[in-house]
Amino acid sequence: SGSANDLCDVSGIQAGTGTVTVNTYNDVVLNWATANNAVFQFPDASERFASARMNLTIECPPGGCDPWDRFGNLSLKHSSGETYEIARLVTPYDIGRAGGGPGSCAWSYDVSPYMHLLRGEQELSLFVSTWIGGERGWQISIDFEFERGVPELEPYRVVNLWDHGHLVYGNPNNPVEDHLTTQTVTIEEQAVKAMVRVAVSGHGQGNTDNAAEFSRRWHRIKTPG
Image 1: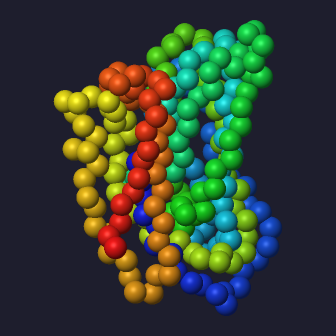
Image 2: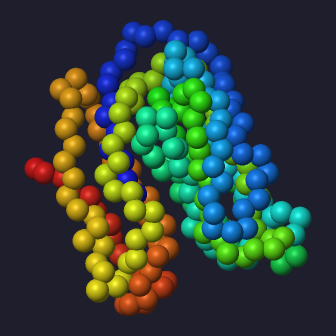
Image 3: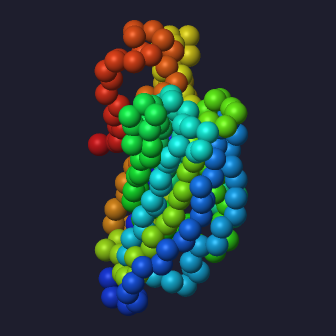
């Protein structure tokens, strides 16, 4: 998946200081490949923030962890009707304490490009592609930290370039080039910067050219000029 973010200069705007924390998922257990959708209250659109981070902790529920590495993500099902993948992860392999693992792992994501969308009442969708079932699975907690202040550049628009979730790689009868078609994004004159975010997990192999694992490939984004 990818997104292009157009940003504009907001120098001179004043804002307060401090951090606003929004707790969302709290020890939610996922043991099947069904998304957990829930609505949360984010800061009001009138508040100014310099940056935003998303902190995610994944640990073993009382029944134990799914031992396998699985694709997972968190999407924002925005009130505008658009859906944006704001974080992607691969679950850690065999972290259960019974096998000598740490029992939990934590990530921190810079979600500043999406902080203008994380406002008011919004729906999040948490997904892990696990089919372990029973009492095992993944126990996940997520919170967001918004740092008050004035950003050097303020994001104001996110454009989904490709949003396929899973793409099979390494199947000559279904090449990825057929899915990642050329996209054209119009950028306003007042924008001073644009960025492209691409998340590639490596999951979704077609099992050719040893693409199940250990197949080394480069991923490039080509722009005109």
